[in-house]
Structures are given as C-alpha cells and as structure tokens.
Length: 596
Image (cartoon, rainbow, N blue to C red; front, top):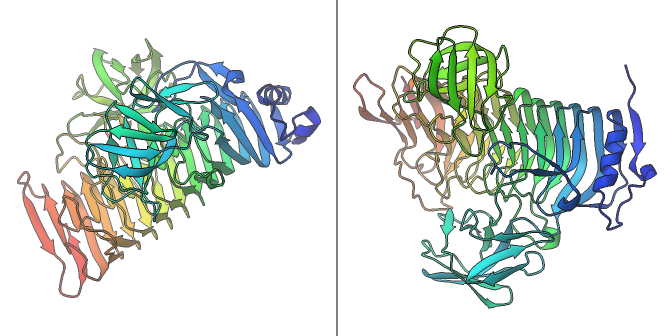
C-alpha cells in the first residue's frame, strides 16, 4: 500500500493573508502531487479570482448552460487526496466554482470556509412599502449597484448583472424570526426601478401581500451558473467541516459520482459581514444521477434560495423507435443536457409510460451515443418493451443512490426541505425541519422537471417538524408531500412503494400533515401531531391526511394533542370507481386508525 505523504502548503509558497491571488499556486501544488497526498494549509485567508480560474467545458446538472465554466481549485484525475484548509477562509471574486473534482477517487475536502467579498446575490432591508412599490435599502459596499435607464444593475470585481436577468423576484424574511415571511413566497417586481438615494432602491410592481417594513429581502440577480463545489464522475468523496456563506448557483453539485459523504457541512449567512439571511443562490446539496451510498449527517441548512437537499436522476424522453433494440430521444429539460455518460454498457434502464408513470419494463443498455447536447441514440441488448411509445421516458436505475440523512437542521429556506427521487433505500431520521414549504417531498416525474426516481423503500422516523408550509411552493401539499407528477394516475399502477412515516413529531398550524399520491405500501404510525397557533391556517387541503390513488395504507396509533385541525383522512380514487372520494374521522380514543 502506498503511504500518504503530507505536504504543507507554506513550504510551496502558499501563504495566507497576502491579498495575492492563489489560483496558480494551488494548481501547481495539485499537479505536482496527483496521488496519495494530504495537503495542509496554514490557517488564514486565501483569495481566488475567476480571472485566473481554469476554463473548461462542462454540462452542469440543473444549471443554466453557459460555457466555458470557471473552476478555481481543480482536482482532476487524482486519487487518495486530502485537501485540509485547517479552518481557512477562501474568498472568491466573480463567477467561478470554488472547488471542482472530476474523474478522481478517494478525495476528502475538509476544514474550509467559502465566501465572496461581493456575493453573487444580494440582500436588503424593506424601508417602506405599498401595493405599487417597495423601497429597499441595499448596502452599497457589500452589494455594489446602480440604476441605469430605470433598470437596477449589480456589479462586482469583474462582472455586472441586471436584476431582471432571470428571476425578477425577491424573497422576504421576517425581521424577528429570520424565517421566510409567512404567506409571502416569491414576490414579483416589474422592470422599472428608481434610485431614491444612495443605497435606497424603489421596486415597482403589484405586491400582494405587501412586504413588511423592517423585513429582509433577498434578490437573485445572477443566472445559476457555478456551484460552490462541483463533483463529477468521481468515486468515494467526503466533504467534512466545510462552511459555504455564498454561491453563484447550486451549493454543492454532484453528478455521476459513486459514494458520497457530507458531514458538518453548513450553509449559513456570514453574519460577521452583516449579512442577515443570504446564503446560497439555489439548492444546498444537489445530488444528480449518482450511485452507491450517500450520507448527509450533522449538516446545517439556512437561507438558501431553493431546496437544501435534492436527490434525483434525469429522465429522458423518447422521440423515435428506431428498431426493435434502439430508440432516439432528447434531454427534455434545458438545465440538464449534454450528459455523455448518462448510460453505459450494462446499465439497467427502465421504460416509463408518460401518463401513468408506470414502468413498462427494464432492459440493459448496449450503447449510448450523443448526437448533440440534447439528442441521443440508445441501443439495448434485448428488444424494446411492446407497450413503449414515442413520448414515454427512460430512467437509469443503475445511476441511483441510497441515502442516509440524519441529525441535520433544515432551517428556513425558499421552497422545500429534502427532495428524494431514487429507487434505492432512503432513511431520513432524527432531523429538525423549519422549512418554508413541505419539509419532505417524495417526488419524481418525466413530464416537466424530468427528475426521475420512483421510490421503493423510504423510512422517515424520529424527526421533529416545526411549523412548516408557511408559504406555498410547487408540490407543497402537506408537511410531508408524496407528490410525483403523474398526469393520469391509476390505482393499480402505483408510482412510489413502501414509504414508512413513524415516530415523528409534527407542530401543525394548518390542516395537511401528509399528502400522498400514487403510492402502494404507505404507513403513518406512532406519530405525534401537536396543534400550533403560531400562524393562521391557509392551505387548500382541509383534512389532516390526504390520499389519492394509494393502496395498502396503514395509519394507526398516532397521538393528537390539542385542537388539531382536520383530525381525519380524505381519500380519492382508492376504490374501483374512478375519482370516488371519502372522508374518515378519527376514532373516539383520539387515535387515528385507517387500513386500506
């Protein structure tokens, strides 16, 4: 066995607190020691500008496609490497991925803080507001900006960004709780801005609800271009003791990797710089098309502008049945294209019927060839399933990971908490959720986002759900929302299977605790539901448990404390009569029991 050598970066001239750009020095250090090396830095501050980053062509999953990418610290074709920052802070300037790992194995990144002097999103404070306009004070030093031709522009060391480039929305955080403000969601503004004085911007629009003076607003003015960490086609990766104060896209993006571990990773604002709520531009951990096992433990998520964790594959649409063994198809979502490694010889590929989302069969891939970034040809060892049609979808079952998610805190972020779409085993246990939308979304679709993965084994246990679903986002039908996008659900063609929700505590201010669609083998038992009065109920569902087209459901031995809203189960489409609806109340002992 080759021993691990220890390299002290200071011996190579890499010194902290110099205000010099470190990109080339890090590149030289890594290239000189590509294997079996533990790099240790002197604790301090190191600076990196996108001007000096490696430029390379990559298709990032669920990201705006704009090449070349900028990669500041680039670990490529390396193995048995530990990059240890010793608690150092890496400060970046411009659009870049701070750390990237490609086609490498046995890589550990630890003890690093990632931030920007000028973040790639902005936050401000609401000073005054009405239905027609909102005045927001934005710090001119942290978030330099100007108004030209009635348009708000932000600028950094080597970039400028028009505030309406993609989103033309801001997200409002409550000044007292620091949580996403109740019933606000995304607030849209028009393209007409005024600079009332230095640092005070008036946003015109039609605001409902009216933002509250004193609350904080987050503006995503840049495109989603560069994740904080990019991990690609690599094996056995560990991210440990890493803090991300800001990113220019997804927090950590992993795609086509095998075996991942995240421990003590924190997404949080840099309050020492006066940032109250701003952390990340999009998701925290975006885990796309991976395999093996993923562990997320003792992590902290707050102030993200999308979901803290999203585990999924990428489904593809069939456009032509070429012959008995071959199909042509497309990458159907514009943010997930160009994956030349989507399938390899021997991979198990499932054929998905578009309307019911049921699998029509599984075949082994023989070859996968890209014709363009959006088009491909896929040939199979066996013949295609008889029922497959143009418009149906493909899912790679081989590129599907198992997930253990435990002892994490999911603070208030825009949208949901944990999204899972994978056929492998999923355990979500002993976490705390303060999610603005659904705490857990068991998703999957082949019609819109094309994020694939019918779940077959999910355990949700020992979690504490605080007052979740305080704002309405897509698919947020309950605190736990099992909500695949199934255009035409059929009772005898369930999409998800074997989901167990046991021994959890729900602080419920609204009706819907659980929503489930197209699921077979669903258990909701030994949970505690406690009525909360922190917020007024507002959701569309007026029942505690809402089930549609589900089979083999077991709901029992749940304890309700206080005047829990609904106290019943509402079902739809669960008899042979299509769309038949029924409601079942709890029994006289206060224990909710239902068997189907």
